Each structure stands twice: as structure tokens, then as C-alpha cells.
Length: 276
Image 1: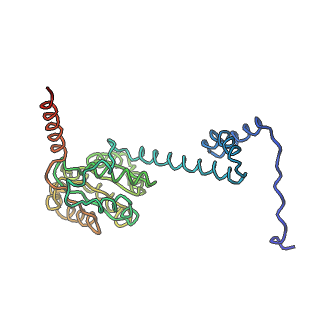
Image 2 (image 1 turned 135 degrees about the vertical axis):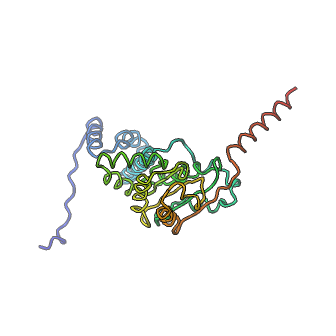
Image 3 (image 1 turned 120 degrees about the vertical axis):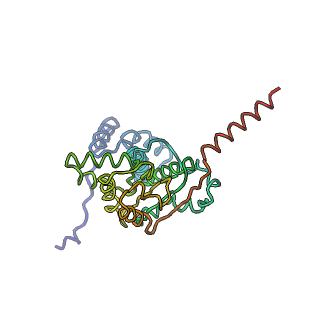
């Protein structure tokens, strides 16, 4: 007889008491790594009985709860793995402070479509203009969407690569950075790199070229990057790779932090003046 014509047998069902069922659920959930169902199966079963849900509806509810919690745990894990130095969200950023970043453009960037396309992003501007806030905010949004993200300063990355090269572990470290969905590279241009450090950093950039996104923040214009990469040809190659099909945002010269401090100071002065 053809296997397709064999009628499906009815699954055997074991009659269990409540305590035995709870023990079986707990054991199965530990085996299957389903902590939410383990914790919520009983109270959700009571709720299902009150609402007279079918067995299928109850099963759908507990599975949905496990999936939701798993997504939440993954978002938390991705953010932790990114190693952001502080918490920053795009919702806290004042887009009115940057002419080059209207809300609609920021909303588009927040979707992460540019990351999926492997496109670079470059933030250029003076200190205090919001570059790091945007870098962390966009990285956080990407991590919350389930992407693998890592934040690192240029100096820290070069030091890590140099130590890896000395320990003959460079290929392993380069491979780890290559597997990221988004590399947030901060403070490019703040310090000059020696020829070895510049070449090691170039390996990371080349490994991700047109395949995986790099978001870079720099206080130096492209013409000044030669001061960071002392070899003019290497500097030109870095600029070429980080700007090809890139989203470039100029954050300007007006310090966001200084404006915020002044606004708070003026508000405090007004409040003091209103006191009798």
C-alpha cells in the first residue's frame, strides 16, 4: 500500500492528574528550553478554562507567550552583546538640532533597511553635536530588531587587533567582526594611527565592504582623514570604502550638549526668579 494512503493513527493520550501533568510539563520545558511555558502553563490553563478555550486555542496561547518572551530575551541579549558604553535611544534625540536629519530620514534609518543592504553610514560633525547618540541609538534599534551589533571606538578596535596579531589570533578576531550585521565605529579621526594599526583597521573595513554595514562617527572631514591614516593612499581607500553607497549625515558644529546645558541653566534661573 502506498504510504500516502495509510490513515493517520490517533496519537496515544495518557490520562494524567494535575500534579503529574505539571511535573511532566516542567520536565519537557526544561528539555526543550521553554521557561515561559514552564512558568505560565498552569495559570494560563486556569484562564483558558474560565474563558472556555479549546485545547488548540490554549496551546496557541502558551506557544505565543513563549515566542514573545524569547524575542524579548533575544533583544536584551543583542543589546548586551553590542557593548554600548551608555544607553541612548533615537526617541530621545532632538532631530530639530540637525538640518541634515529630518524626522522622516531618521525614521527610515531606524528601520535598518540600509543594514540589510550592507550600506555604510557616516556621521560627521564637531564634538557634542550628537554623533555618538545617533550611533548608539541606531545600533540599539538594530539590536532590538534582532541584528548582531557591536559598538567600539577606533582606538579600542585597533588595540584589540594589534593584540590579536601579536597572539597570532588575528584571523579569528577579524572573522568575528566580519560576522556582525552592524559595526558601530566611533571616534574615527580622534587619534592618529601608526601604519600597522591603520592596516589592521583596513582589514576589518575591507572584510565588510559592500556586504555588511559599518556606521562611523568622526569629528574630522574626509579631507582630514589623512591625518589619521598617515598613508595618503590608505586614507583614500578607507574613504572610498566607507562612503560608497553611504548615508552621510552632517551633524554640524553647534554643540548639542552645550545647548542643553545652557537651556537647563536658563530654566533654573527663571525658576529662581519666580520664587518670592
